[in-house]
Length: 334
Image 1 (cartoon, rainbow, N blue to C red):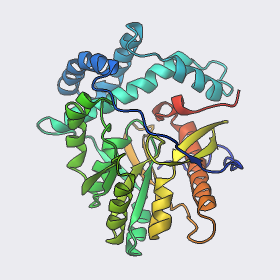
Image 2 (image 1 turned 90 degrees about the vertical axis):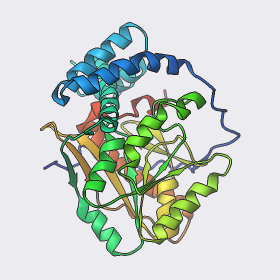
Image 3 (image 1 turned 180 degrees about the vertical axis):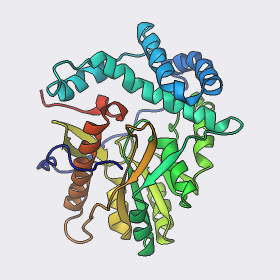
């Protein structure tokens, strides 16, 4: 079992109001430079996914990321710099560059999981679902559950698959960019691979429309009104209201859509952390609910819920630092 004892004291809430995303979003490009790099990488990933046993994926992905860094397909410096600031103080021998490459390897290994899933026979790694009783309790109350899924490298497919295997299919709130590419061409082509892999384990997908931002919220509310499950990845990619939380000695921005849904519907807000444990097995951990005040000041309730999520997030980041995907989004005052 995973020890859930906090690694350090919870972060203290900052006396900051919620932020509002102002102005129109930048239009999606037709094609991006990153698409060309991924087009060159995709045949290699396919060969690895289909030709290597899964026990060899981690090592192969580390070698792949080292080669990509040498060829300047990606820059490990931003993650290395931030991780060194947080983790280096605890370990003088901390190798920041090696850490950044291994962190990137986790992302590539997730790509292999996606590609293997859509291939004949699918991806058959054993998955454990811990804390299912918290979800069962929430559903027994009849108001649905909002799963706030932390942004770790293996969360996207494994979380949905483990829930489905346990008899729970969620509706996932997602962006058109969900996948390998942020461009219009990429959304129309390679991103469909990832959607195909995940949709088989979902009740459905609620896609955010920037022209009609309230439509996704209304669709999610209807799911919760029927005692359904809605999953949302914790991040700040979409949403008009953002909370800035103190975590890991810096600040991280998170959209407040998940706690806002819980507040408006009475659904339980359940944090979810998907990690690879020391035994090498993937575990989807549903934590006890985060209380969301249904009365009083709405902004204060959303801030408190988001800071509570940050306190739990910090525990898992310190325990599984190489698997966290948001090192590049962690900011510092100086």
